[in-house]
Length: 181
Image (cartoon, rainbow, N blue to C red):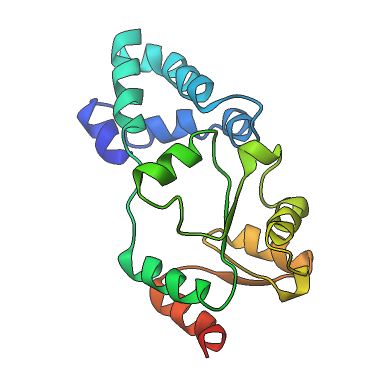
């Protein structure tokens, strides 16, 4: 997002501040508004800062074209894990998640998925983790949550799951090694 701010001649953090404003982002990741509505509101909020509605829409369109990048080492590790245990993607995402997964050829990379926009609540709510466990018929106490947000890991642990704060693939290999035998 920083590169997009720079390209638009805006101060660093401008787009992120508009997109991830707590009330707006929460509405998007809990499904209260659609991804399209979220992005339209971000563009509207940026109109004055960008100098015109057209420039704001162009900035949001450039941001919307980004679907993320995949770490091939993590993907390989997940494939190995799936041969031994169910793997569930749990994401505080918008209604666009399924399209993004398809664009990245990840639709079949997990045994199940929980998109919080479809669930109506977001992590760190314990019911999100409960929904993930139910999708694969697992007991909470037998589930391992790996998340890059420490607060989500703490919430998972408080709900009775094991948790690991993801920082890099080496740690992920170490924490999952017992599962791979």
